[in-house]
Length: 437
Ligand code: CMX
Image (cartoon, rainbow, N blue to C red; front, side, top):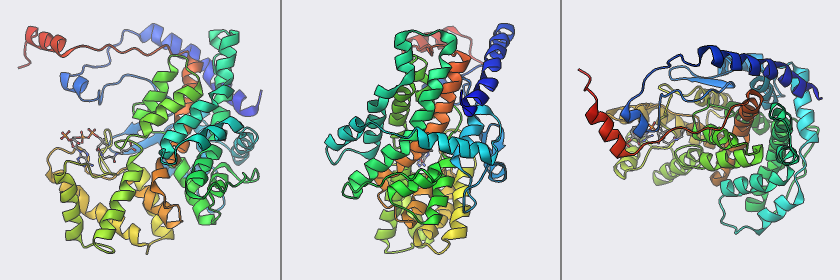
């Protein structure tokens, strides 16, 4: 058994027993109550699942295994240039323990060894119409790689429930290892005349991804490590995480579950917002031929709102403050590209947008989220094709949702099946109950 797998087993297998015992003893404990509005409005705030890898606080933002982003900056191993290695956060989410530099290197080496993508995946991508969105291609490629699922093949042969986690571990490691190669292939096929770049196994996961995309600038490699670290996980209820968990609960393997999650990430209210932000900011810059004034920014925001559209990159279903993932990117930009024209626009938007959104009286969180910042950093380093941005998000998000999926299998989480009702059922319930004074 490899060292990483062994470290996971040491944590997860005793915890499976602990959880079973906990549910046996406290299964009848009442968690709370919820309202009709919550049922109709996306189940926000209803506790409906357990996710071990991270927890989101509305005021403070995400904590990965208990650590905030600023805390992790000093605690996780770093690559050249000082940014954390995504390999480190993978290990943290997987085991709950902070990795040593040697452990992060071991993850890197494992992923380099497991990164081979079968040819039929590239052949399939080559056959798609040119205008197929990169996220559609990404999801299709992940589904096409399902031929390689160790879990699916072990299940078919027959395996005991308690062993489900083992082949799932293999799928998770192989899939994460393969994603940068697939993503880079889509990028180079779409935007660089099919001029593909071979992986460099000596590089860490993030740097190698940047290299295969065609960006060998050290600062871009550094940003890629930061980007891939901060996008990994956002507790269990967001669309990509919840979808992966839900599909996986039917014992669909990691490939099928992740592809489903990626289809959710491809929605403009979720991960596609990264692309929408870039498009919207360029539109703003082009309209005013450079950095606009505060009044012009306000005018552009009002125009977008009056057309019944959202301001991309602002708002959040849980957060009620500026996203710490936004702050992490803002700090990087201040350090490396303070005079960039698009960064100046992003800063201006940060000053102007929240007040306007507050004034609508309905937006619960007027502050920027992670997607409000990433695009202009990528553009600065030459990755200007914004339709591709969500694929980068997906490559990182795979780490969180797949480590969670592995925990699901280790803990023996059963099939998910929440109840649903009709509006008529709801009306009957309300009319037969005593109104609250
Ligand atoms: N611009 C304009 N209106 C907004 C808004 C925004 N950025 N954010 C919320 N609203 C509106 C909602 O559309 C809703 O309007 P209606 O009552 O007319 O339907 C109202 O304000 C209340 O919404 P909310 O409770 O504050 O927000 P939700 O939990 O329903 O939605 C989110 C959260 C992120 C989908 C929403 O803020 C939004 O659409 N933001 C823009 C898209 C975006 O940046 N998404 C990325 C989120 C991060 C990620 O997942 O990657």
